[in-house]
Length: 275
Image 1 (cartoon, rainbow, N blue to C red):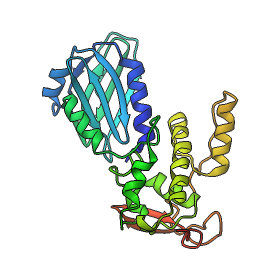
Image 2 (cartoon, rainbow, N blue to C red; image 1 turned 180 degrees about the vertical axis):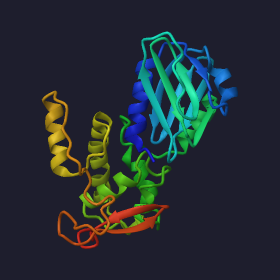
Image 3 (cartoon, rainbow, N blue to C red; image 1 turned 90 degrees about the horizontal axis):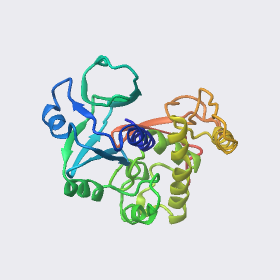
Image 4 (spheres, helix red, strand yellow; image 1 turned 30 degrees about the vertical axis):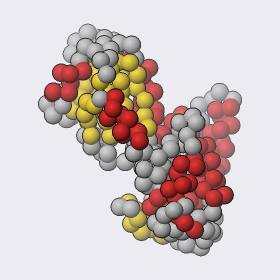
């Protein structure tokens, strides 16, 4: 499932391509025909994201609400020809102007909602590390009252918005935290380490289009960006995610895996003992 940095970059690309325009909105697949008819020709005011939710504002107090789910994609492309752009695959939603076309395929959710419904969506979500001014104490309040494990809580979008399975596994490994520590037993200082790390890592994902969590690569990307260069990434950009049975890069012990909150968690049982 795309994590928060992917939706943040998508919202940025949609805003840059369509804000201020009156795109033609269609549903080549037909499943969003009524919603497309309601939006087509309206001014696209802005596109933003919160966690894994994409919210696109149109004039007339109409909002497009998209959740990509496990297999959804939303591509934004430039085109400079006047002929009809061919539809490839099952396109649920298409936005089109003379300069750009954006195609949404396979989303978990695609609907038109009101401003009041937007407020309700946002109220259900925890703080998003990518949003300026997001308050980590809001998440902490929910974490330290819970008997669920920190591995479960990090995947709960009502606790923390935008973090998925990759960042969950990797950030817990980076701080040597046991993923099975109950929220009520987690130290506040440990939570702030996790939050501050996510605030550091997610913007790198927005910039590079990849999840980068191995520290030497993180430092290389930060240095390249500081010099105004395009970062170069190696093949392996995770320490434990999808490394089950492989040696832990820190201690050599075998990386373990277990389904937690519906997804395969990866961790090192020797390194990750801190609570």
